[in-house]
Length: 445
Image 1: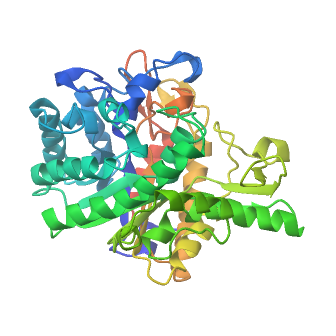
Image 2: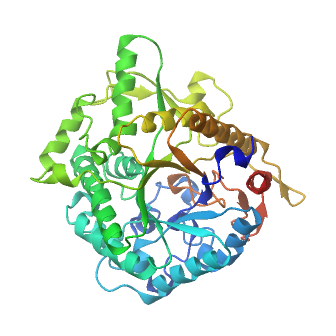
Image 3: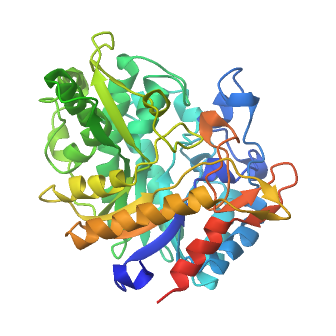
């Protein structure tokens, strides 16, 4: 397998997120985000870690872009920090925050690297959460104002845009389970947050397209191949319900198919938040979608899980090996299965894999990091992307998660996903063997 097998137009890159890397939590009058607030709550983040400094990307972006250049990575996906640009969430933008992204974009372009911007990667301004956040329908006007601000400032140079990152995760983990910011729970929070996020994709997409007609506009979706724990009918039905929630909840309304209520009746609760005309506002003809896959999930029926009547069987309980530091099974076929699944929708646009990667325990020895497990993970998953492409899958690019080790949300700094190792005490960076391999692969013919 060599790069040329994918064709000359296939896009290769790496992805990051603002809150996980930037640090500088209050620099240049940045406003608080929900994650700034959440990380200060006792017991919410493993080991009490916080992201006040993180990778210090805000001050060290040139050094990190140099790693992109060294690895021959032509595309860099990063997110904007909403409260860094609009400290109050709406109103007057802050010049210092906007200037930072000017510098970052310009530097990438100077190095021959194409910036891909994600508007929202989970760091909602706390000032807007105080008004209800994603449960408040006003979020549609808030994100439109934010998108317009970013598009007008950066649209002359940035032509690749994504509206939301993984709405299933930030609404589920943040507004139902409460394990991510803002820490809310229950269907009374999840249903309105999910519906407003679904509407926000089209809302943001229409704004970006109107402001930047030449732009390629998309949004990203988390996904996992769902396998039933057995061939028993109740496990098969449980897997179907889990698939509706995990993989189909947001992509199908976007494609004009509505919410997958037929396979998960509990989603009928979304109806109470639908307003006249919403059926027409949910679909949007994006230029592409990003799918983000790390593993598969094995699911069995469970009478005791309300609404879903299904539970995930953790990889460690199934005795499978290897598993990652996140406890996820290494199952390369999952990315193949998800490309094929999304490609099967009749009106789906281009597909990019906008995140794929793995956390393993890394050790620094003599100034080097020999992360053979991560290298093998990337090689096997890229091979499955090629398999899907050769079988007609509508896949046009692949982005590794992630450039540098970073703040991994509620898991803190323990899981290391990066191609570049970071010592969070000294900020020393070391290119790992996986990064060296990716660079060699991208420089191959």
